[in-house]
Length: 324
Image (cartoon, rainbow, N blue to C red; front, side):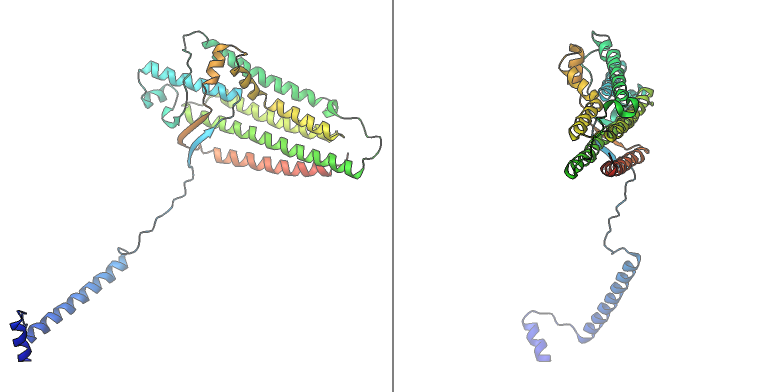
């Protein structure tokens, strides 16, 4: 051992006494023990546990991008909101969001809202505001009157002649399949219009600082019109014995329901004047909302969808099985 220490000194390696080595070993063992106890405590308090991401479910998620139906009432709402935005900027000489909200518009919650090119004191302003409101009311009145006319005498006004002899199996199957499918197609069309009405009301609630009576009344009337057209579908199909007439009347009712959209398309072409044509052409029916859904929206949407799906399924089955 002395020879090995002598050789190590000759090589320039320091040699530690055995007592010192034993002391260092004891000290190292003590440090290892302390380190293990520290690790145990850290594990106990969870300091060394892997980080777990907690996903919190948002009860009211942000709306995001929403597209309004291109009907006359949605156009009326966008025109009115556009004028509110322009009026707020003009009155307060600023685009400050707080000033705009005091003027009646929550501009900070929407992206894509266009301002009308027509000035409030300029030519064509009354045509775009009061004139277009009159067009909206007239359109809704025509829709109601035509639907009531088709429902006259309990639907017998549009009924086919009575069958002189029973239908063959293939003719009966074609007629009842046509009734069921026509009711389903018309029901999906009405469900789309009902959801457009819900979105129309929601946009007004999110962007306007005060609740609009005009929007509330028009939304309720549009909902009642949807129910009326659905009733017309059921009553009319009940008395029809021709598959061709079933689809023709379904198309007629769909046209009545979409009359507000056709009025917008006609107005864009310039039929009601240059000012209305220019204003409606520049409207953006697709808005991006950074606010959350209203508390009532989920209930209204789920209720509307549930009623539509349930009614379409039940009535489609009923139309297929009911005798002529």
